[in-house]
Image 1 (cartoon, rainbow, N blue to C red):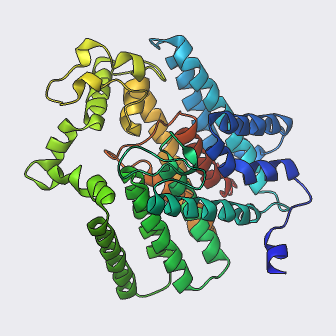
Image 2: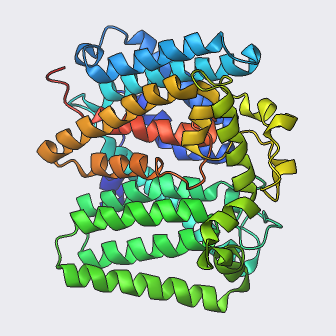
Image 3: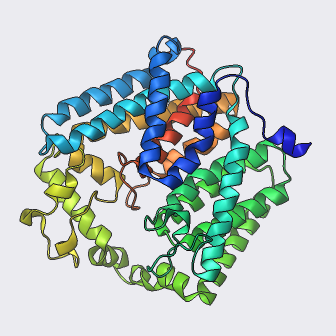
Length: 411
């Protein structure tokens, strides 16, 4: 009876429902399926164009259009028009998706929560697969990575399972809390998620996940400060224990970054790392193209130019990459100061408005998405590209979901 009641299909909005159910699967299957997801939602948004009147009158919608107009203007300053155009079109799809998801979730006959049992099933399968690969050396399909201390899971050569896990974790924990599982089960689930994320070996995504889960439980769980402090100590002790018994994890989380703990360690690590070379090139590109940048997706071409070589950085000869691996420097180098401020205004206002809404409605799923978006804006920590298919798809999905719970009663 529990299983039967747990997995319930709605009678209306069935196509949208199935698309949302399958989104985690699409992330695993790759870019073609992610693009299909956003394109399908765009078709639905166009078919329902006359709906969402309140959203059209909101400041968030105006800011989305303003950022889109800036990207359109920026396109004509792009150093490679053909590189930038697809990214601009992708943002158009994102705006349609935001509009349609908001329209869908605010319908009285639709509940986002009905999707989460299916996501939970996928999440637990991926969690098992990560644990299996960590212990055995390859996942249940035979995938593995040659990079010590990293996990491939179902994503194969694309080492992005950490981003996927971060995306899913907060919403799954929120679902368990909403279903009134005991605090003990919630804490056990959270500790397991943190340990599995740690085992994945993606340091940046682990930091973001740990930060967001810590804040989420700190504000949501109704227990004493001493109990919360005790759980934190237990988690840190478990992480230390894992480092001490596993050489690959020790290599990822200590040996590769131990220079940080020395005098001027952060600066030394930055200058010795690949990320440092990427980000220094992005900063120099921004300085040379201060107002409008070099255009979306053009860091990959601009960064290889000799003028961006900096011998202070050990890996400066391999500074070229598809993106600078830092969301703020990506926007500064590719869209310039004007584009960066446009993006920042859009996102910070959206977070502010969503927090105001959360304080009124106390929607736990909205709080989860707010923390996810904030965690991806932490400066210095490496990140994927904000306009890429996988990382961008995850970021903008959460951004759209965060906005979808808002009540646009006033502009």
